[in-house]
Image 1 (tube, rainbow, N blue to C red):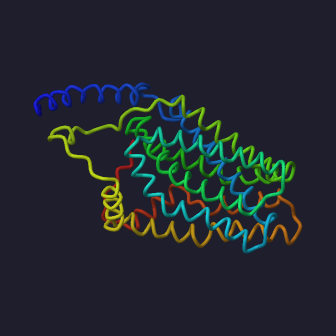
Image 2 (image 1 turned 135 degrees about the horizontal axis):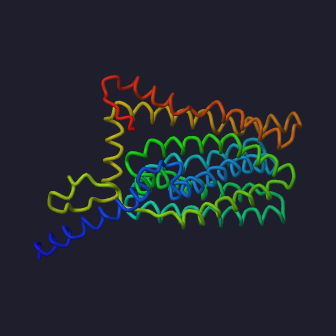
Image 3 (image 1 turned 60 degrees about the vertical axis):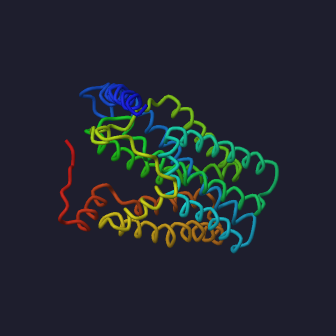
Length: 324
């Protein structure tokens, strides 16, 4: 029986390797920025990230209009908590069921939820209970989407193009931070929070449709895992504990994760709420709010060179493979 299982595993290994080679090397010599499959993934990621920016601005605006300052703070806080808690769990789930399925399910769920909220807001004034519910659901789904979409690049391109794909992803995130907020502010100014939520839902729907056309291959293997006997699959909790242990013991990841967590908790939430309250107090309008958030997004996202410099400083003895 074990011999049969070994033969089946040995027979499927060349098939997986051939599939990965056909996908990653299908455009041999073609850089990532000219690969249609990579560009489809990048377009879906950009649409989703812009939708995030529009959603957060619309949520902040609706929260300050639908309740008191304290209630608006609660709405934004309850949306941030699931993202902070469930992000690592989303990575484990992506490994379990596959990042493609998780990304598609997350995009579809966000699209349906946000479109439903937009329809509600177009008919009536924003209610705090509804915004709290939306913030919790959206934060939970977003925590599943982010690690899953980040796991796709090794499955859509070759190893030699991974650094370039990650750079393109960074540029897309910067574009979303700069362009998404003014776009959301313009929509709020023209049609209210309902119009902005509707536009965010359309962007998530566009991301979903584009991702359907992205061809996903297996993760490239160096052959080391196929040499030994098949290993028993560990439990999700064990995988999560292993991930936390790896972060804690890594000289680069541990301080970077701490810095990012403190930045998100101490900067992003208070900034969004504070800017919204400032705009309301001064009577500047939603379009001004969008431009202010865009300006902060332009300077708060580190460029790829700065990120690499921080990592190199934290691990001066490490050897870095910069690719070709």
